[in-house]
Amino acid sequence: MASPATKQDPYRWLLNGDVEKNTTWRFGAPPNYEGVNKLFEEGRTKIWPPGSLEEEVQNLVKNWELENINKVKPEDYKIMDPSKVTFSLNGRKPITLEEKRKLGGGYNAALQTSLPAEYRLYDPKHETAETSNKLFTTTFPRGFALEIVQVYSGPPLIVYKFRHWAYMEGPYKGHAPTGELVELYGIGIFELDENKKIVKVEQFYDPAQLLGPLVKGPKMDDSAEEGKELSSCPMLKNLG
Image 1 (cartoon, one colour):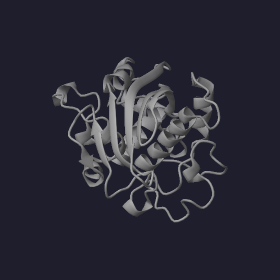
Image 2 (tube, rainbow, N blue to C red):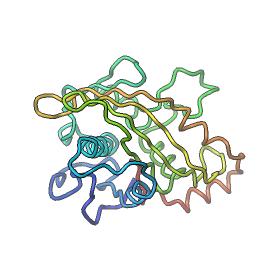
Image 3 (cartoon, rainbow, N blue to C red):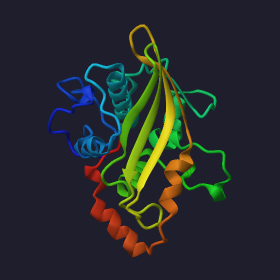
Image 4 (cartoon, rainbow, N blue to C red):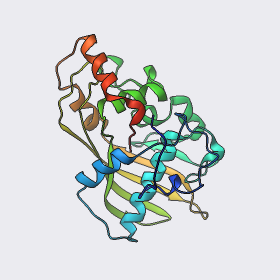
């Protein structure tokens, strides 16, 4: 969830001008990435030259994440071709946009697991797009930043290595915040068609890199966790 964007976003062209003036947003308004942009600029390990392939891929991934998490209507998609695009996580069978929507989209699709229920640190079966957004914006009140650390090949088959990071400054499912840096590294693959639309997405990463550090803190009582959730004000935050 987010407050309306108030100025030009330096990395997400979809938010600038009138490109999205008729878009229906999942959380009611265009996402505001000012906080996570600050985290990105303070914590990135690479500064790519303007106009370089690496910068172009990095911005493409940021715009794809914006679209992937925040849009609900296929006709509003501009980075992906909704009639063709498929998604695959860690070598699983590719799924369509509609199948992804049925999983709950966003983090539910990104954190699919075959672990027995008792070992799951995040269970997609018990979450929705709304509950998962609230969960992670509470846990990461400054956002979940993204950078591209290497590009192996350019379009039409883009292969890249990414780094996500955040600081656990809010509770996670009853576990107290640790304030520690949480990092997730992975490999992404985009296949583009002749119209430069994404028609295939593959991602490879270990969800335990993200979820494991979130349960290191001691368990909190319910009143303490509720207070932390209210103070984080997830309505004003975003991830990506």
